[in-house]
Image (cartoon, rainbow over all chains, first blue to last red; front, side):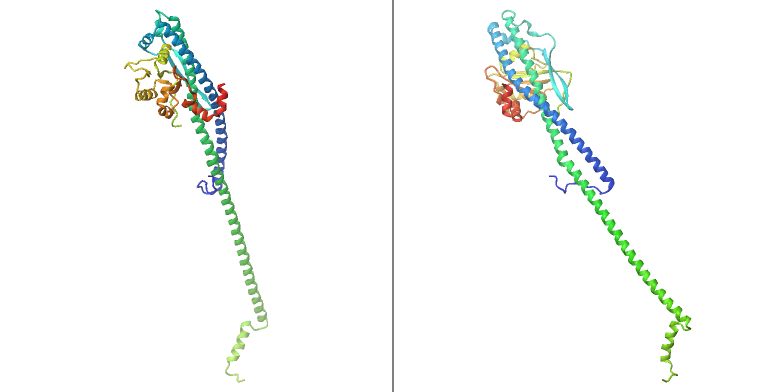
Length: 260
Length: 130
């Protein structure tokens, strides 16, 4: 995945290098923080898993006990007790309230149950079996207590599960995509800058060599010119210019008066 | 975080039930039953005459109602609509599979417990239960 071809499309300058370096620092810090968060969530997650398993077991026992209590109540109060109960349903007296708990920035719902208003079933089984009916009621309230706890655990489990998945995805994205890309960009920019520097150096060297040769050429020309000057001066001192002397020689050849 | 559910605070919510008659009667005695103005109940009594369609509809209704925080469902009923229970993945309302009187509880069939086991190694689940 982290091929060397993966880099940001930027202009290779020193300023951009600074910016990218700052981004890499930020990505590294973010990665470390997210990793810590993921670890914290995982710890919590494992605790919840353990609790769920044990609570499920105790739920089985509680439900068994409450079923037995119901059977007892039925035996004493008669089969038609259930019709009284079904008829008496109006508004819920046992309700659930939810609140939030914060674990490493993840909001977990927690359920609490509470009683609200008068129960309508107080008079159920007044004729016979009142004690068993009340015991059965108490057993079911206990069972609901466990069920509510289990429900909040289960909800936390689901929420944490998704939260951990998201966090891990982010951690991996930072580690495997963002950071290599930034590092590649940094090496790319550094390489480009080095190349530019070398090019510049080479260019300067070339120019220097060219200038040197030019100066030498000029010096040579000047020296030649000076030598010519000196020769002319000497010939002038002798009375004849260098050119006229030459001219005289060439003219004498063409002179028709001279026979021989 | 698009699928993060809205978790309402400091309000009261109901517990819905889909179970056999005895379990429902017991839970109603504890006082969780509710009948609203339109005579709609927050529970469904499953007997031999109840169709799977009815259970499905009740399950869908309970999971979409806003005033329900927990849905209790008997395990043998959950097995009838297993595909619905397994595909349900929202945190609120929480689906809870409960044992019923004449169907012993089997932890391996529970949709949540099977996920727990998938994440946990099998032997640590077993040791946690002992």
